[in-house]
Image 1: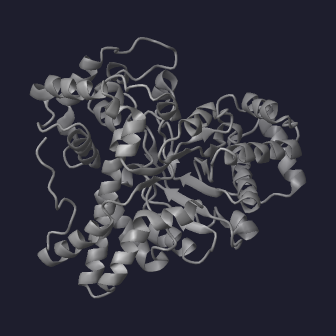
Image 2: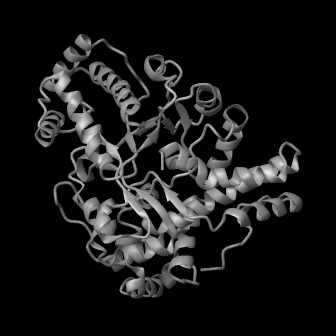
Image 3: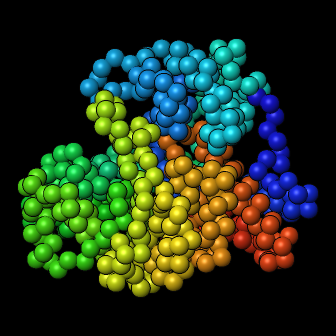
Length: 468
C-alpha cells in the first residue's frame, strides 16, 4: 500500500495546513470513544480469531458490497448469507479476489481511505490492492489473523479504544456482554437499547416480539400500561450492563403526544395486525415520545436515526434480509414532526436526544436551529453516506454558525467493520482540524480556542452527550 499522505485531508493552503497539522498533533493520540456502532459483541466475548480476510473486510460491510452490487456483482457471490439458507460463495479467496478486482470502484470514496488505512496500519500491507496483488495481500492478512496479537481483544487494546457501544435488540439477553465484563478488557464494551422490533408495527413478527418482551419481563404486554412497563424493565436490564443510550431507526421523524386512552386504542389496533400504514406511523411516533419520557426518568440518551428509506429493494430484502446496503436518503421534516414530543419533554434539562439524518438539506434549515435552542436536542455526526471527508466538512459548515459545536455529540463511527474504526476516527479528527484551522486563519477564533475545540470534538462532547 503506498504510504498514506501525512497531510491527507488538510487544507491545500500552506498557512492553514500548518495550523491543521498543529491542531491534529494535539488530539491524534487521544483514545477512541465509539458510542454508537454495530460491532458483534461475541467478538470480544469469545476472542476467537477472525476467520479470514474476506469475512473480516467484505462479507459484513455494506459500504463495500453495495458498491460492487451497483456494478453487477451478486451479493451471493460475495458470501453474504441468504435468509433462506440458499447457496452463496463460501471460498474466502474467491470473495477476496472479486473484491480486489473491483477495488478501483472505490477511488475517491471514504471507503478507500478506510481500507487503505486498515491494510497499512493494522496489517502492514505496502502494496496496492489490485488483481495482481490480491493473493499476496490475502496471505499476509490471513497470516496475521492467526497470531494472538490480531485477536479481537488485542486489537481493541491496540486501537486504544476506551469505550465501544454495540447496538442490541430489546429482546437480546446480553449474555455476550456479561462474558465481556468477566473478561476484563482494558476498555469498556457496552450495549445500546434498540427496541424497533417491539415498537414498529411493520417490523416482521411485531406481535410475537411484543409477546416475547412480556415473557422476558413478566409484564402483561397485551395491555398498554403493561407494555410500557415492560420497556422500562428492559431498559433497566440494559442499564445494569452498562448501557447509557437507546437507539431508534424509524423511517420518519414523526412524533405524537396522544392521551393514554387514545394511545391504548392505537396499541391494540397495531397488536391485532390490522393497522394501516398511517396508524403504524402514528404508533411509532407515539413511542418516540414515550421513549423520551422514559429517558427523562432514567437518564438514558436517546438516539434518533431518521431520513432513511431502509431496505429499499424488495427483492434483496426477501433474499438477504435487512441492512444489505439498500438504505436510501429520504426527505425528512423535523420542525413539524418533532413538535409533539418537544412540546411534551423538549425543555427537560436532563434529557439528551441526539438527532441523525440522511437528509442534508435539513441541517442548516431545521436541525441546527432546533438544536440551537432546545436544551434536550443535540446533533449527531454525519451518518451513513455522509461520514466522509466532504460530508463531515459540510456538516460543520452548515451547523457550526447556528448551533456551535457544543450542541453536537462529537463523532461516532457507526460501523460493523471493526478494523476500520481507527481509520474512521482518523478521518473525522483530520477534517475537524481542517475546519478549525480555517476559522483560525480567518481570524474568527484564536489558536487556543481551536485547540480546546479540537479536544471537545474528539472526546469531550461524546462523553457529555452519552453520559459516559
